[in-house]
Image (cartoon, rainbow, N blue to C red; front, side, top):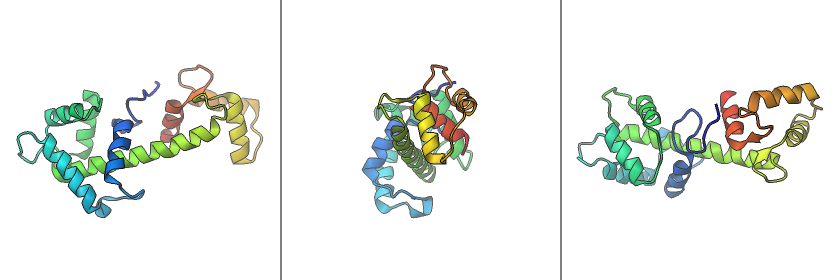
Length: 182
């Protein structure tokens, strides 16, 4: 099961959207709900208001579907339902402003994690072909663990991480593997 680049592992939220959006609101790296800045509150408020078409203070599934579509974000109905279920704290089937802040903080965290993972991936991808070969993995493991990896260990790692069995580790496979071991 390879994860597509259109979604992020376990969050169901488009990483590109999260990265683009959070560049605008300038959150600190370790933001928490209690640390949300006034500028974040204002920006999320503007987005919330624009998505809340009937101005009832609640975002329904269709409000979010249209809002994401208007912003150019591709998210499956399944992922959107999952996201709503995860943040709908009062269980009313809609997202209020406080719950929207939770979504935005999660999106920021996921976008930041993906940026960090991409930096590590690029370090391991010595030839820059956007995939990690057995040889590159072996060198990275030796460098970072200070231990020589046996051919059997290397093969076991590749079997665990190379989901599409093409002999290389893509960024999606790398990210999915890292998230599985969190």
